[in-house]
Every structure is written in C-alpha cells, then in structure tokens.
Image 1 (cartoon, helix red, strand yellow):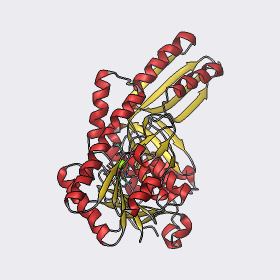
Image 2 (cartoon, helix red, strand yellow):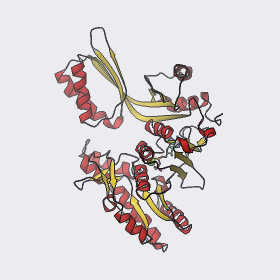
Image 3 (cartoon, protein in one colour):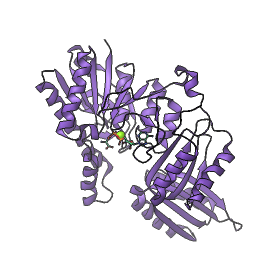
Image 4 (spheres, rainbow, N blue to C red):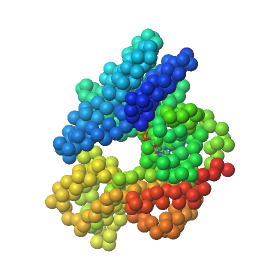
Length: 410
Ligand code: ADP
Ligand code: ASP
Ligand code: MG
C-alpha cells in the first residue's frame, strides 16, 4: 500500500463546493487502496485578506504576529475538508504544523523546514485515517508559529512526501500542468510532460508561481518527484524529476525552453554613492530588513562614485525608502530613482550556450514592439529583462513566439 501525498492550492479549496470536490478526489484515491496525506492551502484570497487586515493597522506589522495571523487561513480549510470527509463516512484528522511536528527556523515570513517528526503521522496512518495537514506553516524551537513564504504549501507538501516516503508528491492546482509560459497570459503556451528539477527550479525562481521554488529545491535535495495536476479535470499533469530518470529524447532540448515573469516589482537606481564602504553599509541595512534584491548591477564612474541598479518586490518599498532616508544622513549620494510597476521577464534554457546571440534575439524582439528594457541580466540558465509592467503580456507572448515554444522540441 502506497502513501500518497496530495496538495490542493487556494483555488482548489476556494469554496465549499470545491472542498466537497476535493473530498471526493481524496476518497477516490482511498478507494484505490492508498493511504492519503492531504496538504491544503488557505481558501483563495484568504491569505491576502489577512495580510491586508494587519497592514491596515500597521504598514510594517510585527513579523511574528503576521505569521500567527496568516497561518490561520489554513486552519479553516483543513478543518472544513476533514468535516466533509467524516460526513462521507471516512476516518480523517486535521493537523496543524505544530501538531505534526513541522519544525522550522525562526525566520518569520520565510522560514525553512528543518525537520518533520513522523510519530504523529505514523500513528494516524496506522489507524487508517486520512491526514489533512495545514500547509504554509511550521513551528520554531521556541514554539512560535512560522510561515514558509507565499506559495509555501507546495513546500509543505514535498516535505510531507519525503517524511512519509511517498513515491511522488502530487500538487493539485488550477492548471493541468507546467507550461512553457503562464497559460493564463500566453494562449499558445504548451504543457511540458516531464521536466528536470533544475529546469523547474529556474522557472520557479524566476516567477513561474505554479510551484514555490523552495518546493522544487526540497524535491531535488531529497529526490522526491513532483507531479503538478489539475484539481478540476483528470489528467497526467507534468512530472518534475531527476534528469537521469527522463528518457533522453525528452530532455535533449537545447536553447530557450520557457518564458517566466514576475510582476509588481520596483526598479531602484542609486547614483553617485561616495565609496565602497558606503555601498557595503547600504547592503547591510537592506539585508537587516530582510529585503530580497535581484538583478544587482554596479558601475563605477571616473570620479570613483558608484551607480547601483537593482530590483525589489513592491511590498518592500516602504522599508527601502526608510533605509535610503537613514543612509542619506551618513553618506553622500547624487540621486535615487524608484520606478514602480515594473516586471521581470526571463527567457529560460538550462545549458543555453550561444548566449550573446540569444540576448540579441530577446532585445530585437522587444525593440520591435517598442518595449524599453530598463535592466538586463544573464546567467547560464536565463536572460532576464526588466520592463514597464504595461508591456508584460506583449513581451511574453512575442518571446514565446520568437523562440517557437508552442512547437514540440525537436
Ligand atoms: P495554487 O493556489 O494552486 O497554489 P498558484 O496560483 O500558486 O496555485 O499557481 C498556479 C498558477 O500559476 C496558474 O494559475 C498559472 O496562472 C500560474 N503559472 C505561472 N507560470 C506558469 C507555468 N509556467 N505553468 C503553469 N502555470 C503557471
Ligand atoms: N496560503 C498561502 C499563500 O497564499 C500558502 C499557499 O497558498 O501555498 O501564500
Ligand atoms: Mg501556489
């Protein structure tokens, strides 16, 4: 008998009707003779609603209390599903992270899972109960409730699959797999049947929110295949697994294989920083506030002054403005510019080689559409550009077309 871990995201449990549909899906799996561990997100919109309540009281709420608040969304969905399962005559139990023993570090809002105690899980499995676990949350060494970062239920699910030694972790969501680009924005996007952990990790890290990047990272580290499926229709979904388990013809693909994007970013430009020491101090302040920055670009002018450009998420704008005010009291800078409503678009290809040519192709495609590139960065795996958010749909659709991603790889 296999233990199957199924995770259902916010839309999949977004109403009582959806929760009943999930109950039926779980029951169908039990009837096939499997033991099931379910991991749930909060009902769709609930986590945002909770965050908005907190920020109406304080623009920068206490991170401990925010985690306490945000974690409550999952408590509602797990108990409702368990009620639906029991009502249908099945033995089931809902468990919060601290009841399972999902231990994390104490980085509120972005905690990492350190260990999972399997005792309580084994007990419930022995009693043939369906276990319904709250995703997104954990508990630190001092019994504080933590959360794993937005989209973190995916990571909870992969960690549970590893803990119960499942064959694969099933992530049920509102699309039927992982696509060459967000299928909601690019009509021609094509479903990818099977992809490597590395490919999925780059996609997730560059904004493809179908999987949280830490979930893929966890799967890679513990060799736990992840299958992304629709909770609305039957199908095989997309499988994320190790390269050596994928048939060669399915992963011999070269060049750009997907386009990812990230919205609601802010481009920060700081010109004329007086010295390296000043710059180091700025990054220390940014780091202390837990702000994640990307696409950092530094150039030095003749006079030794430093110009910096980087991207942060819009949620961190107030924190950054406060840091810059503090910074300007101690050091000289010429000017700062904050461009709101920018988006990052990335062309991804694991092992892209002829990369100057690909950069040219990306830039030509955008120039033809009169889309101004505000910042660019490249790696062996991706070419990312920052553009004005209003051009996002055109940019991804055109790049998807230019790299011929709607066609099956040759
Ligand atoms: P859940 O609430 O189930 O966790 P999410 O909203 O977090 O679902 O993730 C699913 C969404 O991810 C889809 O609705 C889709 O719009 C988006 N998405 C972005 N990039 C991709 C991609 N490459 N393939 C599939 N979905 C994607
Ligand atoms: N409810 C959390 C969020 O909205 C976790 C998740 O959905 O995975 O981010
Ligand atoms: Mg999600």
